[in-house]
Length: 492
Image 1: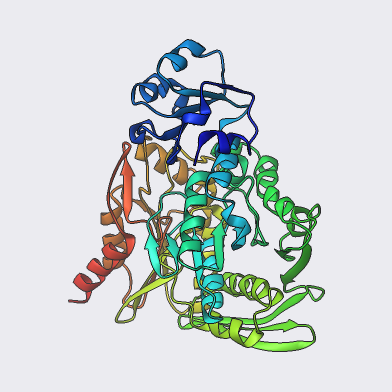
Image 2 (image 1 turned 60 degrees about the vertical axis):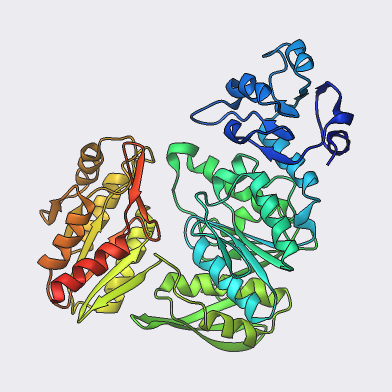
């Protein structure tokens, strides 16, 4: 695309240089990837400021640079290097706006369903994708575990990628004849303008509890960030919200879209009742428009009845027959690392992504519901470094109160001292029923070998992640692989 064509459709403060002569082949925020026809966006991040890489980018013959501070580098530097200087109010917003135009406003040509909440985004997204595919609609997915274009998996590292990456994925989905895309939308993405200028045909609210306080600082800021998604949906769209969550009504109060509520409250538009679950799956009844439907899923837990209902809700209001939605939910495979059961003889290990106080409590309460006091419950968990510290003692208290024994270990300590994190967790434990084993593999092995033959062991915090980050370095580590290894060793 010619740069001047792009500039004619976006908002800028100033342009210095000859945009008519520039052909743009890619948008990037990474100075390492800059080539001759690159348009580079200088983004201020938490760890680095892209503006500091502008001289390097100019030397690499970038076609143009988008920046916020027009006085940072003189116009002459750009003119001398034949690099167009584009000054904007906010580089993050500009990246979203430019990429939307560059890729041909792809979200307008897709049926994009956004999902936000503290818990349940990934599982709900997998349910939604499977329902639409059961309905013969080719569906993409953008989320924490992986991105999918139809059945083709594309690896990801962020819950919601950068805006130019999202628009690229949308355009690729359209090329592969996808009609729908379901996307997890994080609070960071909403606050950092990664989904600005995108069209959501629907949005789902799962729940909200305290999380990411290292970034948001206050619950109000976290809530306001999440709320932005529902304010974005237009009057011809739908917002699906959990009426049982105390913030459900408030988060959708300003939306222009049609509201559909779900939950166990009698006045919910889609009413859930008679939830029951065991290690084989979850069963429940939904009431919608005067009819009752029996649903079942292989996924385990009270929370998965809610996730499945959210998916059912968005599907039926968008024209999918209830019977098809029910079949799609029934056939949705196990979501990696989301209350995933690994067994050997009578011993069970449950791998779960629960990394907040509320999600850990829900996971342990679900296990208590299943075992009904007949089997001992053990918990292996740690907390991530460089993240919200306030939850650490609370999670320690919850794990101790709801477990026979707790193995306090490392999660992803990142750049923090793992023993400092562990001390903060232990500070919340009032009972003498814990062991500190900093090495996560040793902690999992000890829990398996030191527990009863029919014990249930929750390994919490990392879920699907296949790495551990220590001192800023990632190495391969999978809770599931380690659990399978030592279950086999224990059994033999």
